[in-house]
Image (cartoon, rainbow, N blue to C red; front, side, top):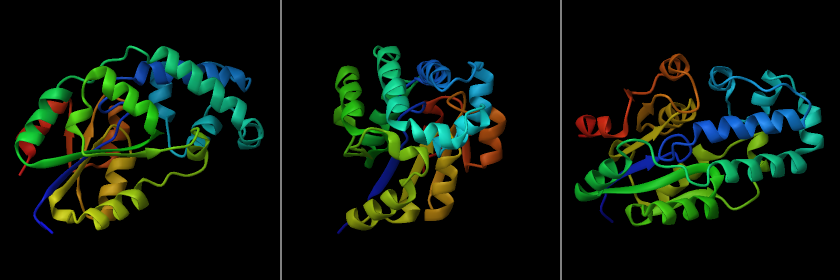
Length: 222
């Protein structure tokens, strides 16, 4: 097994796919479904969170109400999001970074809280599928991320099974999750601005490197 092989891990929503606006709009539709008021894009970025239950609580919906109607609420969000994100493009520099990584010996994978089949549909539409060795996401309806996420466990097992060492692995995302995952696993983290959270929250999450567009990553690769 080649212990020096390199892995670059991408979050999907807000990192590769430029879908913050559709996510915000779909979240407002879902908040309205639960009887709460719509929020501004700034407030969305200030309160967006995983697990998602905290996001609803911070915006006036009790955990009990969300869990009581979670299947209906999930359907409202997913159907709204899919309609709004139907023609969403990638973030600036996505293809260029992926090409650079592939050409320089990196294996690329997607680690996501979203649904595998939906990611694959977007990858095919955007003609990006061939850049990725694997997609590690969910095969359920999306309700699992209300109370917990499993990204750390999934990536740890993936790295162990595939033989990637921590010192040869990097992760990029637009939220607090990726720096937390990186610290847990001893890997390098990149945070990309202007996704699902404010720049202040991203800075406070303390990724190893903050970038404003995906191609900025290239100058930091070892």
